[in-house]
Amino acid sequence: MSSSSPLAIVVHGGAWSIPSRELDAHRAGVAAAAEAGWQVLDAGGSALDAVEAAIARLEDDPVFNAGAGSNLNRDGRVQMDALLMEGAQLRAGAVAAVERVANPIRLARQILERDPHLYYAGAAAEARAQALGFALCAPEALVTPAQRQRWLEARAAGAPAEFESAPLPVRGQAIDALPAGDTVGAVALDAAGHLAAGTSTGGTFFKLPGRIGDSSLPGCGGYADDELAAVSTTGWGESIMRVTLARLAADFSRHLPARAAAEAAIAHLARRVGGYGGLILLRPGAEIGIAWNTRQMARAWRRSGMHSARAAV
Ligand code: ASP
Image (cartoon, rainbow, N blue to C red; front, side, top):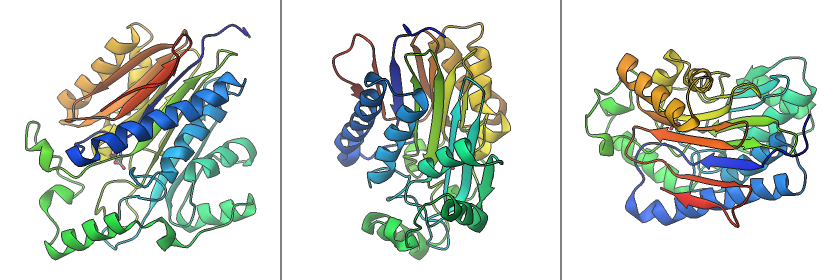
């Protein structure tokens, strides 16, 4: 184990389209999250700690579709998915369809550290949360006025075809009309040379109750292996799961530079299943790759040698 690895953190605030009035809030949100993760790394914390801190910050930010501010499903409820994974021993923790956990990424961390199993869903995940010492919140505490309004409007308009989980939209079809994502994720590299990845989401807007997307599935919404890369993805979950996007990008990075690996994985997503999405990828050595084929993806990064995080949307 080397103590001289460069440090790096990259975060995303989701693929899809970001309304122009929300661009500044997205940019500020991902920058603050990258800084929060950086402070952990800079103080000697682990990549896991940094990813957890960055994502918890984004979950607490109502601008993003994770934790408070999550998208509502067709029943008007928040159901969240989250994954955390580390690259040294390939340990992971994941939860799906949780309604009463304010920071699902913190629950994923405790499952990773302390639970015999890797993945829980629904009421069982909330029971594990209580057993692990979490206080459950009221489901309504995570519903913001903006999300309630959006849901009321969608319900009044019926269920538009693009909110159905299948079929996928045809490539090139009015991307601007697709519902915004704002899923969040982070990847980090610590001083010991270890990688970690995490992703947290309220899932797609107006999804059917019980629908679980890619974000919490190892290899789909995220992946971390010190021998390859750390990856967090976002986008149309039904397409991402079919190509196991995070693992695919990590595998591509074995023979390609980080950016080329990220781009090749997104190109594969589009070519094989007509999918939409984006991903952030971080290699040992702090090499960063970011790619997306949606209109936008909020992102921010900081690595050794930079004086502050850089953010873009
Ligand atoms: N991938 C997420 C899901 O399908 C949504 C997103 O990233 O926007 O649940």
